[in-house]
Image (cartoon, rainbow, N blue to C red; front, side, top):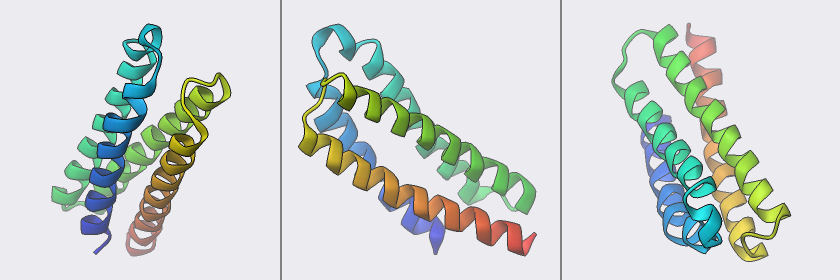
Length: 117
C-alpha cells in the first residue's frame, strides 16, 4: 500500500517542482541550484522505484531511507530558495506540502519495514 502511495505522491511532487518551482528560479540559478533540485527529485523517484522491487527487507529499508535522505536534502534547497527569494511564497508553501506528505509516507514505510524486519 505505502509503495503505491509513495510512487503517486512522488509523481505529484516531481511534476510540481520540475514544472513550477525550478522554472521560477532566476536564470543564474536555474542551472546550478535547478540542476541539484532536479537530480534530487529524480534520485528520490529512483530509490522509491528500486524499493518496490527489492524483496529483502534490509535492502528495501536501505533504499527507502536513501529516498528519505534525498528528500531532506531537497527540503533544504527549497527552504534556501525561499530564504534568498528565488521563489514566491505560494510556490514555497505548495512545495513544502508535497515534500511533507511524501516524508510522512516514507517515514511510515521505514517504520513498517523496521517492525517487520
